[in-house]
Image 1 (cartoon, one colour):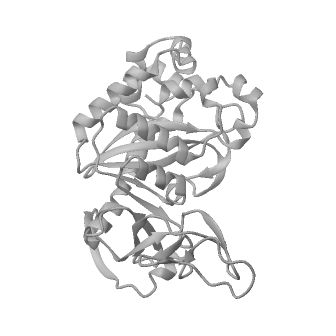
Image 2 (cartoon, helix red, strand yellow; image 1 turned 90 degrees about the horizontal axis):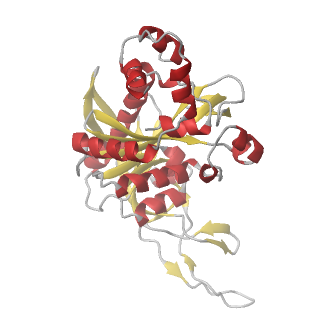
Image 3 (tube, rainbow, N blue to C red; image 1 turned 180 degrees about the vertical axis):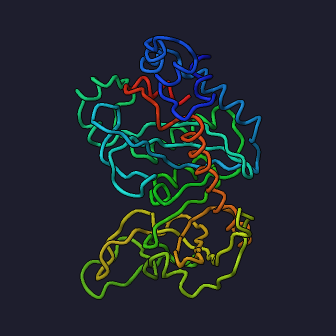
Length: 351
């Protein structure tokens, strides 16, 4: 059934669900093909490993990017594994859908999908009976955030020897301090989106021992300045017009600014009269983008301190290619039409 199913996916036809593919392939009854998809009876690991090897041959290298993102599949009902009311990236709002964490290896404008991992929301991981009924293997029943799912997938990519220069992700992942630290611990370069209110310190922040006016002496040092929101840190920065690539309607341009900061993602500490503050963490670039539409975006990256602004902007904006990969999967290979409802089917599908 595998060659037939693949032929159906890459062949002509608008619908890539089981019955239309079986009719185009002249299979007659489609029960066998449906069982092949829904049962997920093969060993996924060798297929995934071969996928990573071939992807590396195609686009791997020090100038390649590993893009972390997620994509959603709209679904009706409640029985398909992982389906729940959750944020749907395709609609930009909460909807009944399944969410897949994706890893895309890209060089220039050529994307190759490395992995799709089904995200299980809390409404699933808190219901053991539901997980069992849906056929989710025991090792996948533990609650994990999307950043945790992504880090586990990145480890497989690294173990397979896939070559890339930088990890890119949007603010849904960049907001997570454990995700950023996880990338740093793995000695990876990264550039991630962040919300405008994420707290940062000036790069020259110092830890001092304040003198207590009364009471017991201070037991811990504190920053000599308070942290501030990312957008406030860039308020007085020097902005430059930068074009990073040519699109279908000409050069893509925006205004960018960047300053070195220390992210407020260290241990939390109460500072007298100031409430709780996270202590300064690692040094990084804080990058701002002002688009022609008026929209403002903010990013963090651990690229070297000598990196010029144009390189920072071009690296950050390279993430767009994963959207192209998602669109190809849905429009050309029928990802939205996948009919495997069980946990095993989704584990098999990802390869």
